[in-house]
Image (cartoon, rainbow, N blue to C red):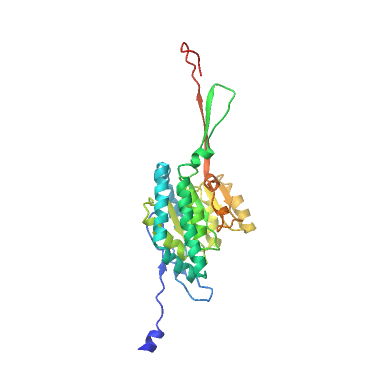
Length: 299
């Protein structure tokens, strides 16, 4: 009996993807098995296809109106709730980080930083508008206002070198600003990404606001940048050939692109309200100043 137990094959967990508030398997039916630094298979992970990405875009576009129209303080409440749920599952995230090669102390630090980063952006949800809006001087009898508004649907290639902190650091400012997104998690360290989707699912976040895919960047990046219903793209790796392709293909619909290729997410440089601004459009409004005759002068 002891010999039989020792020879038992481990049943690997199957990590699904997260689209539209649900956890489907990839449409392609494909999967891959990331390995630990010691060569041990960690799980069965979905190998997403173009169809999965297109489904995620439809979901993100459908959620955009409701999410962008929410009160800023309500978005803040939801991001704070994410932090609460992440804190409550700290042990599970630490275990997954250790499986993927992190030390226990570094894993704890990463989960703590990811939790704190969500709280940081929760605090900015109802404040960044004041920082980035303006009343502009004009040479006519008008009021002229510039205010930030969310860009729309954002596709994101998350940092490939870490599993959790980079993922949280790119999602949080995008949704804090009222956008929706589709995120491709780390190919080699995907475990925390789907577990983080479970955190999102239980955090009052409306379905479709965040959609998380797993798979190969080399296969999916062209679709992330080609899709005509994606308004902006964030790429977090320093691969010149890929950056060149993104620049060229983004011109098809004047997609806004950002390269976060030189950021240490473990430092204060990994958080800033300017990351929120990156996915905002500035809307300028003109309003005439009416002179009030016979009322002691005008404005």
